[in-house]
Image (cartoon, rainbow, N blue to C red):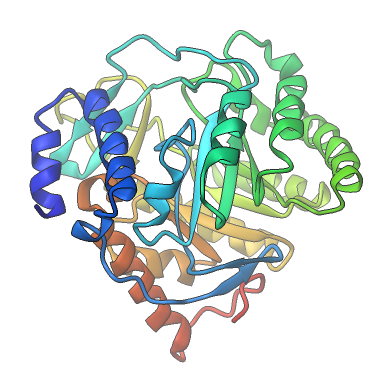
Length: 353
């Protein structure tokens, strides 16, 4: 059975149910050594970013495997790195269902999951029990009932718990589904948060004798001046990288579609132009001061190449992977290998052969 047939069957189920069944199926196929039935060949294309060697620059974005239940199975599909989470200090159910919607005519999803997860301790236990030895990012957030002014405590708690098992740590301040979270992107609030986290990070670096890169994930729903302000703040606080971008609350690209009036973050093809605009501006502002991970609207190999042309060092898939499966991982990895080996390869610092 090829992926398209499997996807069509899964799409007959309610969206969130098909999501969970997909992860269970991928995990089971890995356990039974059947991954080859859906996986595609992915070329070696090593890249060094943030001091980490990635087998290839195509990763899985956070949100698909929030609780690290399927990292072995997902890694077997050819991803160069896996990002799990968003995880919070305490378990929480997230927002009421239904909270995940497909817009297949637009190659898009809308979600208002609300950081539903089993808590950071459960995630750490699963990672330790897994066989995965590749590059693992852990995306951290705050609990919904934690006041925004106390967010630092939640992020610091998660950082302490995951520091030993993470290849890099992502501070998620850009989900639209946790009330008040995006206010942490404002310059003053962001400086306070990052200053506190960096102090905690330096203590952990000494404790464990290693530097785990600190990355910030930003939203696409900002004007140019706001992006420039965030870039300046990230440079001042000496973070290692930035992920551009999270989902959008805009509906201009899907107006009139079924479910377009549902609240939540829009991902997939309609997000591409908006995310790419922020990516280009961020790359211009940060230069070689930090790594950039491009995510949002990658539905083909050429979409991945475009992210790298605009300044990304790495790319991540989410919605495109749901619609196209492992074939998209292979297509993007192949396209990026050809691009990086050619004369037109971006010379963006932070990414080396």
